[in-house]
Image 1 (spheres, rainbow, N blue to C red):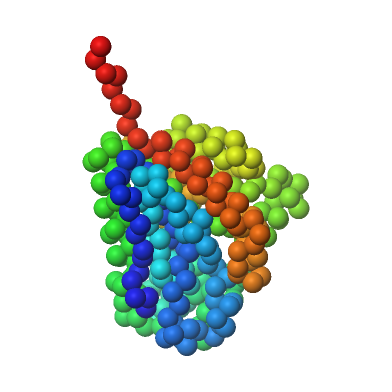
Image 2: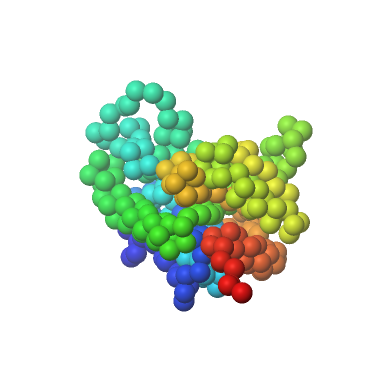
Length: 287
């Protein structure tokens, strides 16, 4: 269990209803967790959205909070619902009617596998152990995120969550092999369900103006964060941002590449534009 399940960087003064979050960049791998896994210290990180929290570290400079996981995705996946428990991993969890492809593939809220389908554990864990992880990590993170979004709506009339991730280069390389264009940025709004189209249009325009190839909802449309928190009719919007890992890191060694600082600067400029979207229109001064 990490010392603290998340890190929250707040601006000196909140000036926007925008909130940035990085639920998959946690890298606090406890000794007990590593000992319980059959994977080595390097392989277990393969599902991690490494360094995404650092790419978006300038969010508070633009008046927006940045909420980042400390607990690794392989320990608890914060982009899954607390009920997405895997009966193939957790003893005492009944098989539910219906088909949840994420859970079936081993990518429930307590993951059974990392990237490439590699098993994390030798056997099963108890339901009590799984629920303890949710109590220690999942609930505190989501409780804090819920409060941030409620504060945004109260202070600024709307909340816009940018759910920040990175995607394996292989995931988009496969698109080009099928004759499709290869994006560098994928924006997910669950095909219009999690955010107003005008907001997503502005996000896309900001990335395109910075020179990025952008796609929407393919191959990633958004998971629990977008589904649960995206309520456009109530003034609460979620846009998932996926960044090609090859733009900023060596995936094999899991370390920043020579373009990391440049991408960080580009994202800092883009964040300034995104933060503007959450600022209320000021009334014209009386003449």
